[in-house]
Length: 98
Image (cartoon, rainbow, N blue to C red; front, side):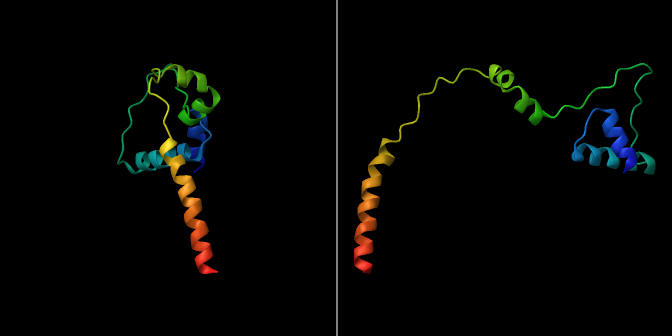
């Protein structure tokens, strides 16, 4: 577990799910069921980035990458027409119960 935490921290991650993945990866490597290619000497180590955190910290960048929404706004007038009927039905039901 400590090796998994150390591996996750060295990748720049602090999330529990990343630690769990690293622990599983290390366990598989130690048992011989998984062979991972070694990075060349002097290669830059990537940083793990949470997409959720990225979206929350910079929503404008996410929205800027989307195409414009040209759809018309939804109409709810048909539902508004149902409201008086519901109120009338409730009133008649409550007077029948009394």
